[in-house]
Amino acid sequence: MAKPIHIDAPKGKLGILTPGMGAVATTFFAGVHAIRKDLAQPIGSLTQMGHIRLGKRTDNRNPLIKDLVPLASLDDVVFGGWDPISDNAYEAAMHAGVLTEKDLAPHKKELSALKPMPAVFDKDWVKKLENTDNVKKGKSKAELAEALRDDIRTFKRDNKCNRVVMVWCASTEAYRDLSASHLSVKAFEAGLKKNDPQISPSQIYAYAALMEGVPYANGAPNLSVDVPAMVELAREKRVPICGKDFKTGQTLMKTVLAPGFKARLLGLSGWFSTNILGNRDGEVLDDPESFKSKEVSKLSVLETILQAEAYPTLYKDLFHKVRINYYPPRGDNKESWDNIDIFGWMGYPMQIKLNFLCRDSILAAPIVLDLALFIDLAGRAGKRGIQEWLSFYFKSPQVAEGLYPEHDLFIQQTKLKNTLRHWAGEELITHLGSEYYEG
Ligand SMILES: NC(=O)c1ccc[n+]([C@@H]2O[C@H](COP(=O)([O-])OP(=O)(O)OC[C@H]3O[C@@H](n4cnc5c(N)ncnc54)[C@H](O)[C@@H]3O)[C@@H](O)[C@H]2O)c1
Image (cartoon, rainbow, N blue to C red; front, side):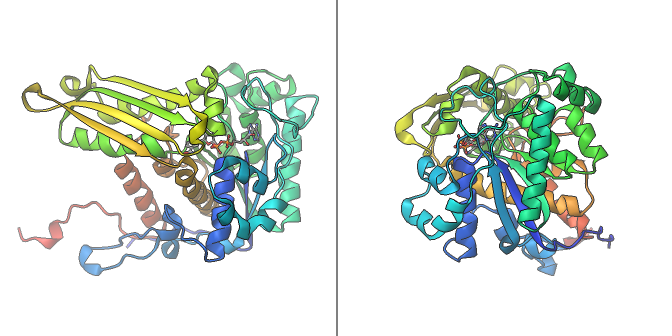
């Protein structure tokens, strides 16, 4: 048997900081309080409910993941965050309208006490946001980064945290390409000092986190920790990073279905995806620049799964379109429609219609929890830089330069579980299974 790697025990409290205290973050906070009080089950969370098979099928070893690796306990987590809107977490949760007043009431005291720290915010990057009065002022971006670092240290001290992690749950920023300031830590620091307009708020948070040794996960599709400067800084400071864009609703379904079509060599001629969405995220995405970030993230999934270059007959002519329509009456209860045109034997066409009436933040909240606990685990295991094994949670998984991301949900799951087996000194599972048969 392999040797387990050394992982520090999860002593003391773990602070979970979220830039952004909107629908996703407040649904996550409230849910964790409810689970702690035994008012809810951690449905959708692999760290809390997931099992992992160990050894041979005949061994019957299938412990909970949290019994295999030393994860922080939910009783030891403390929350904090930043938001340019000054609502406390209770008010923000009421505004988001994901959870009912009845489900929020038992945690009103804790959530009301959770007030956002003033944010590093710039309207140029998120246009469609109103009432943004809780914003830091600074002469330069370097000063703003310092202020965030100070917030992290103060939060850690005031809440007596042993460790802190950060999960970006703030609005999707406008799409921009890499610029010179993103290419190295040195260039980035110079860019901060000279207020380079190409440096976004989310990148300033990421920089502050890494400088403070805080593992960082990016839940939105914009560039933040996936630029060369941050990858370099994460390695230098020995901090785990991962991203990006939580894989929930429609894309989750895509990464379940598309690998199935490819496995059976069924062709695809078209995949039209449309959504109606009425929450603040939907409003922000109504701005073409923010939507562009989302579109890039949503479109790349099929391309990589289908490998049209290897299967030109099946996928070369695929027409893939994604639309998001802001439609206030639905609030957080998004509805998506997918029309999938497939073809089979002798080219005969078939259609699949998928209509998913989902709840965005209900799907995203357990992802925030798992990411926070897993990046904390990675930090205690001495891992640094990109954590590709957490691809399972993202629409656009961050991977090492030169690699294509793995989008197939089941390969991602195998990668995640094999990583945990490896860390725990257990045999990797290959599914070969020849030992059960003669010859
Ligand atoms: N819910 C899902 O299924 C899902 C899936 C993938 C990605 N996401 C992404 O997660 C993020 C959060 O989604 P949501 O539904 O909670 O949105 P939301 O609009 O309810 O909350 C986002 C919050 O971020 C705040 N914010 C904006 N800029 C900020 C900054 N610079 N610093 C700190 N706070 C800032 C906003 O004021 C708002 O309160 C979005 O980027 C969304 O695209 C969500």
